[in-house]
Length: 262
Ligand SMILES: [Zn+2]
Image (cartoon, rainbow, N blue to C red; front, side):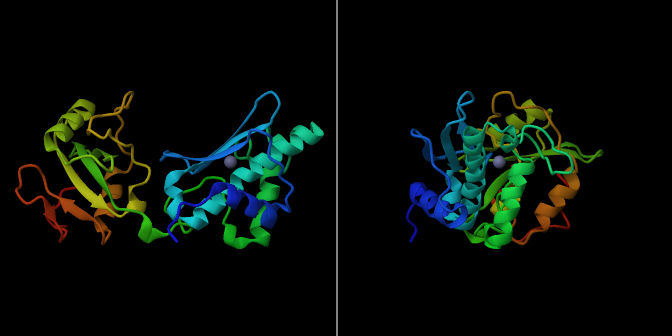
């Protein structure tokens, strides 16, 4: 229990269970974890020979065996596609272009990918294979997703304009820096910090560990800022971290009626 899953072992097991051992990895193929927060997993291959290079899986999936399985099997379908192409030179397997009357999401996710994905989902519904993985969905162990802190910046109260950023998990709550970050990005020092259940914190851009903006961070405001914020505030796990001027750092009872929309 609680040991880091062995990707090589899982690969071998899934190749048996789901692919009848048809997948034969190229010689230098490697499986690895990465610290990415953006993707669940991805597959790389040599663009000239279509030999397999890597399957990379987000390290945070190691606490979520069902999501890890779904991700790895998804990437293994890509691997099978390139193997079939190497065997047949038939570009059909690469899903480069839409085929008539066949589903096509983007390069790599077309007729062949869907046929394999649908076959596996039919035979093994527990796989829950999808094209786009959504961290925190039904395949995840929700209780194992740690809560996350969000910086809420009110940009224009009258227009309901604002932006939400995710704090790095090890970042301090440092009001001065957070305010100057808000000012730098949005000409506003009107900020608050809330802590929300992990799955609700997905999709917001991360600030740096020192709470400064990342390089090339765009000055975007959030579409549906007010409804999004209200949804976060309405969640029973949401904890308020009060405004800089106030003394108590945390508020466990959510002061909804007094709360501003940003
Ligand atoms: Zn894919």
